[in-house]
Length: 300
Ligand SMILES: Nc1ncnc2c1ncn2[C@@H]1O[C@H](COP(=O)(O)OP(=O)(O)O)[C@@H](O)[C@H]1O
Ligand SMILES: [Mg+2]
Image (tube, rainbow, N blue to C red; front, top):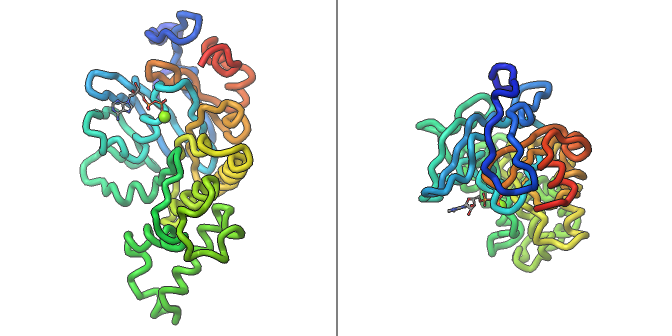
């Protein structure tokens, strides 16, 4: 939780955005969300520029563990940028400069010496378009654990009397079961993943993410390329995953956010976090007039 002083009228920041009807001033307490327990991710004063473009402006947000946090807002408001900051994916974008703090379990991820491979293992990501490797279903799952060396030590095999292929089989099965796709692929694990439907490919990508044993799963519009049936499977899966993992999901589909998330953060054009609270509160009784206009479909 942020340790800022109690907010008053005077702390309101002016909003330069042209989105929505009102010339509303954002009040910091609208996004000062309090919950029980420690934050899994604590973001403070995060600013991102792409060259001269100020894409995120002073965003502070604490994300609770083992729940679904939805990020909503119109296109271009900085949702993907924010998500990519949570596992330092923006580091890969040359034009991006990032200021501020992001802590994972209280540890700053923006400091020298952070192992980015380990970070991205702990904070995995699933993208909008399913992107399986053009390899077998099995190899898609074992790729990460092999890369990280978890399958190749041979020690486990010697200690347990099992060979690596059994360890791999177990891991493949577990990840595919967790991603609710095992029943559909158990008979064709050696087939190329590119032959799966879009919805199956996306669940495979989620399984691939789970196979390296993450703590946080970031999803950027994971169902927006899928048909309604495949979408509803992904939505069910997200809710299940939140029993064990911290899920942060970007969606432009407000009904989806309302259905699957525990808390919702609303970004509006200009890269500002306007309001962040329990999902019911955001959809039924938001503080911000612009948020109300947005969630009721008056603009966006
Ligand atoms: N790789 C990039 N290089 C330059 N500008 C970018 C890049 N990614 C995003 N932006 C800009 O940052 C702003 C926020 O984009 P983004 O985070 O993708 O928004 P959203 O996901 O909400 O649609 C936009 O103005 C966009 O053009
Ligand atoms: Mg985006």
